Length: 342
Image 1 (tube, rainbow, N blue to C red):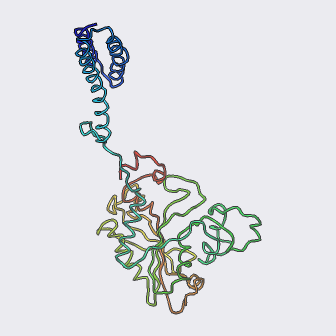
Image 2: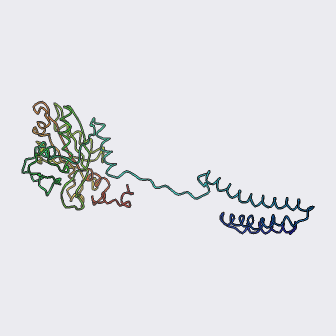
Image 3: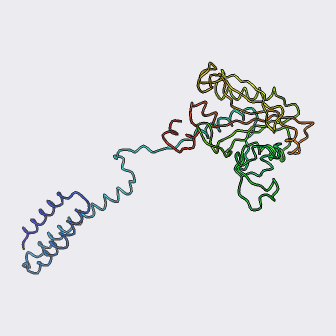
């Protein structure tokens, strides 16, 4: 072996390096030349004449250095790429971002409107006892709403022997928070109670086993129906448009006296009549009335001194009207194709 042989090894090495496509291939070529070709070169030093051995050794070491640099260069590139973290030349991927659920957005919108009128937002337990859910709200013991057909009761041992304060159920309305709040804070007060409620009923395009309700309560010394109409009128005009009209119809609820239903003019046909409002021009949207004296007594509030109004409406129904959604069950389907529209 002579100096020309080392030159041939070097030429062959770089020709093979040029053909490699991956770092693993480059590493394999470098390792082969160091362990096989260069090892053979250094093993042959003993056969080289003394006057040429020095130059021969220098050329062999230079070739080993070049091969080592190729290996180090590959490691350096890998390290720089890791330190860089992001390859700015790589095509970007748009990140997926979530949005608020339409029911959550509507709940927040309602909260902001009532906040401007001095109402504070409060919350209460979804797992309620029968006393707060029914007794304190003036529901009689034989009221149909107490039956299993309407209410989801929690299975308990010896339930028949328990008091109404011990019997548990999934609340059927957020009205249960009325008495809870008045027991801790005396009038005057203004609150809204948004939250989820539960009913044991068949589901269809306008009914679900659970839905979101917005309860409102205002109690003071001189509160009247006129106050209620002014508050609700402003609420719906801000919520829908300044063109919406309201009407009150006599009704009955155990926890209010007098009681009335609240209708709003249909926003889809401007009150002219359509399939949504059943050609009447009006949509029933809220139940309300003046707080029954028995409810005030349950909360230990002087019913001779204080009066108030209460109302309740379905947030789901409001979103249905605003967004023209024809099936309430879509809100709970988890279908992103539906939710991404909002």
